[in-house]
Image 1 (cartoon, rainbow, N blue to C red):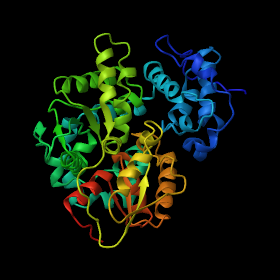
Image 2 (cartoon, helix red, strand yellow; image 1 turned 120 degrees about the vertical axis):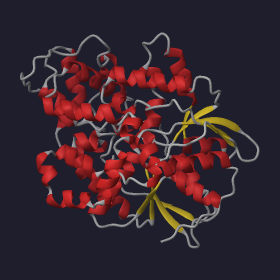
Image 3 (cartoon, rainbow, N blue to C red; image 1 turned 120 degrees about the horizontal axis):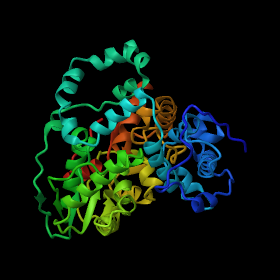
Image 4 (tube, one colour; image 1 turned 90 degrees about the vertical axis):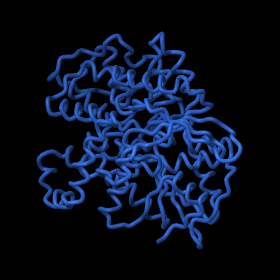
Length: 445
């Protein structure tokens, strides 16, 4: 296969700091099984925007045959990091490790354009820091209450100025009174007999814009015999910078998270956001070259459990009531970093089926990414738009009354496209549904 080279940037290959491993590259037999499951390939339709094509590029850069420049980097940037190819690959190619190593190389060695650099810096300086995000709550609240989002989107002016800023604005979550609350006690006792002592990670966007999900998660855990610990010093899990190759920032945030739980003596660390959970379980890899934190990171990662994974493992002890007087049909949305990254698919469905009256339906292309992929829908809005439209349509076509989504990014992306398609279907986290079932709260509508 011939790979064209563009010499607009003159970085000749990767540096010596953990480039994509040739041994991992060589496991790819170029069979093409990954093509049908790769969302970027399905939208763009070019070989180099598929896992197989990107592996060709990695190999060629490793061998010094082509440069790490705009022509090659754009194909790595088009990858959503959804890891569907990892699930599909019959040869067991560790594409997740290959694309991760490549993105860290790009962040160090590829000089991005000034607008691209500034936009990325905005994301990395804001989203992983809840206290910084908190300063934006009041202006966002006013912006939304004045009805400005509808006006901005109707004019299309922002999209003409900056498609990326328009994409960011289009998925702004609603700011409510609960967004301003951050008053969790450090320790919340179990109801009834204590079975476990667990730590809960609040997340960044999750704690500010999806606080009802965190509250529901805590109530579900305590109702099922868990003493819950919430360290005040916890910050970002490092998912966003890690997925975009920001090595130093990711490592710093991972150390902070480990330190925040160091003296808490928890049996497990519980997370309710799929992307965060995948990164938390990768701490051993993120800090593998840190002699002080290497072992701590491995021990911490071993304790991390997705909330649904944990409940399926230990079993529900709280009584569950029906959510409606009539059967409730739910379609469960598989978040990529839960399904492909953590191999968690059966457990959420097992937990939801325990709620009396719940019937589950499966969408077409359930394993295909919705286009959110962390901040992908802001960095690559055109591809994300097509994927979001397709995902929303497939979920609607199941005829379900409700969508259960385990990741805030997926929920925002799907909600946006449901609205664009004129569909009114509620999206709730499985922990919210369990919480209602435990408390006997009936859903209306």
